[in-house]
Image (cartoon, rainbow, N blue to C red; front, side, top):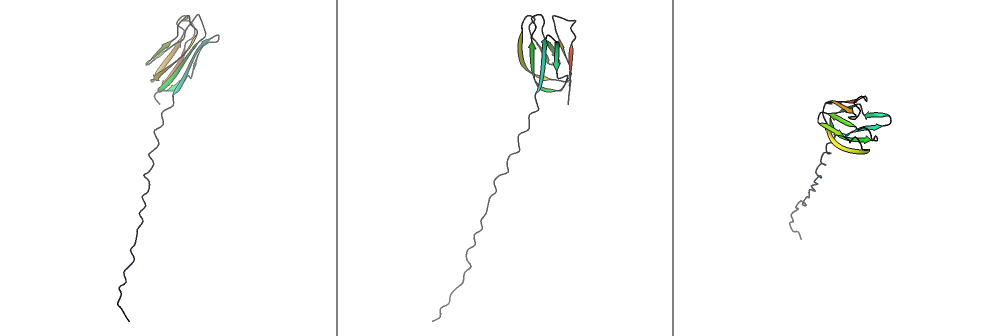
Length: 120
């Protein structure tokens, strides 16, 4: 006996793979925060750093004298401690290009210190 038959191609399956979406770009790095240290003590006035780049800053005022004070003044910054207090004070500020001057208001003859801030 013979019977006719038909050959049909087997169904093909195509596997589609979807790639995961690309990773988002890393967040932009925040510019570093400048740490300005101001001190009045037995050695007199100290200011560090002497040069800085404009931007966010943390200013730490340390006053160890009951007879004087520290006063940092410059573009956009005017911070100081009291004359008869011994205190450590931290403030946030944005430094702008220019010259910042550190003085002792109670003793104007004491040598002032300066810090120069550049744009970049």
